[in-house]
Length: 71
Image 1 (cartoon, helix red, strand yellow):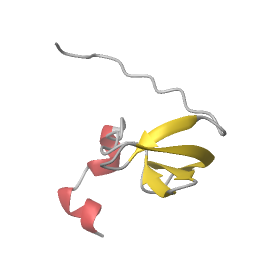
Image 2 (cartoon, helix red, strand yellow):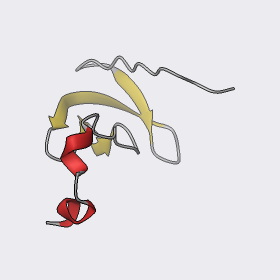
Image 3 (cartoon, helix red, strand yellow):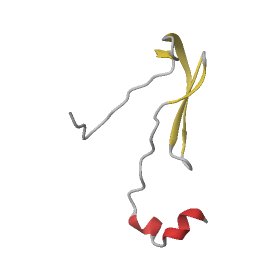
Image 4 (tube, one colour):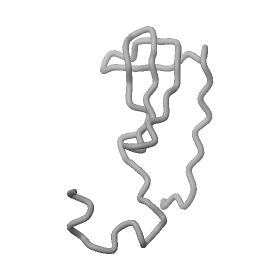
């Protein structure tokens, strides 16, 4: 099965399952970091990454010179 679209609905106060032992935790804060593109979730069990991947920039002009992404 291949997905072409993914939507995640998260709300402050929602209960989620985290960790290797399926511990329940409540979401206390949701943060989006524009510079890195990451979404982090603060929970009662500590901060968590919402996604383990980042979205690629849609603008081709951003990477005209391949060396620019390292400057």
